[in-house]
Image: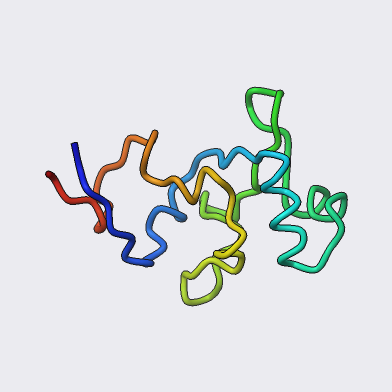
Length: 101
């Protein structure tokens, strides 16, 4: 087991991989950005590898496209469920917020 305390360092947002979106995630992120859900999908989502869901588009190098210049999430209050639940359900190495119990 482990404990997790978010350090708000953005390290987890720089790893390549799919951030799968649920319907509520799309609605919340679109509202936070002041855009329609359709526009959010067109600009910030793509079809996931499983071809059953949408995923956030990545920036070059695999980082999340919502990281700002300081490495902070531009939609933190409306971040997807998968991000809110990090690191549960992930295999994580080197995250500064993980502590063994």
